[in-house]
Image (cartoon, rainbow, N blue to C red; front, side, top):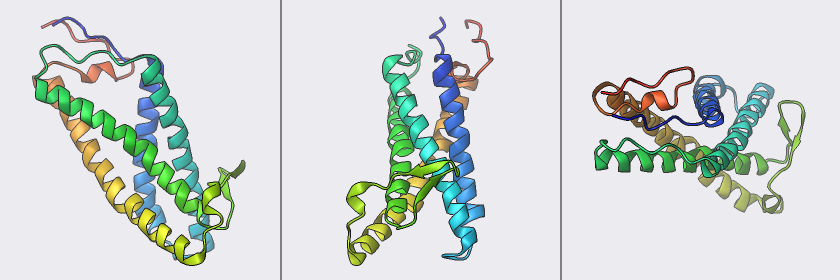
Length: 193
């Protein structure tokens, strides 16, 4: 099988950085943030870190999308079954929606609070302007809806999608047209089969 090429170095670097930050973010939310007492100083500090990581994921994801548009990914192997190609494309599309949508939801949640959003203690990140004038009932209702979407639906969708993504790449690497090497740094392409 002829080589189908690799992703460019910037795409690879952004891919693995975003993946690591997402795993950190999910773990931190479940085991570091969830047990903290509501409205405590410890929770406020932990939320500030969580928001900073989320905003970093948002910025890197937008950069990753720009790189993908400017330098399209290499084509999938010609001998990959059509169903798997469709699943790969669908998975990537959903990932982009999630890695941009989840941080945007977090930004909405942070903007509904009067406290400033501080990015890693470096500077204040702006609140979304259209949320600052909401009355208390509307703000509470929006917080509840976006919070449920952010913490339950989208995060669990990401976890399931991540498992499918890794499983599909490993399955193809082992028993199908190898694709995993295309995104691994420092790994040479497989020999032709």
